Amino acid sequence: MAYLSGFADGEGCFCVSFNKSRRHRFGWDIRPSFSVSQNRDRAELLDMFMAHFGCGIIRPDRSDKTLKYEIRSISDLVKRVIPHFHSYPLLSGKQRDFQKFAEICSIMERGKHLRKEGFLKIVRLAEGLNNSGKKKYLRSEIKV
Image 1 (cartoon, rainbow, N blue to C red):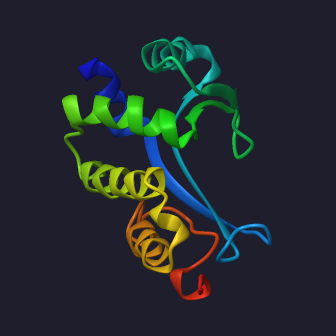
Image 2: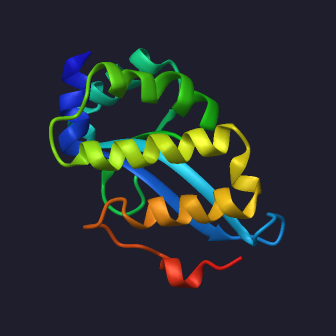
């Protein structure tokens, strides 16, 4: 199982996206996800992730011609994904992203994102995730 952590260290992503929403308390839907991408000819690696975690989906990635294994359920992230990466830690700087991601998922699992303080804490933590990646919304745009 350490192999999966090593693979995720290179090809995985701990992401938290924000989408404008009229039905959510603060006007934003928060969506944490763990994903791993791979070329179609190596899809068996994604099958290994799915078999290990026992949840998630494999789908085509719209941004390129790869496949993506993704888990978005807070319950599955907290009960399956996070314990795995605690047992088999990442060895790169991605470990810092994982720690922030785990804290965000914990806040959401406990329902604290429904309070202003918890929501704002998630916004602050998510701003520091995946600094090399493109962000749809900047922290300054997400207000409550």
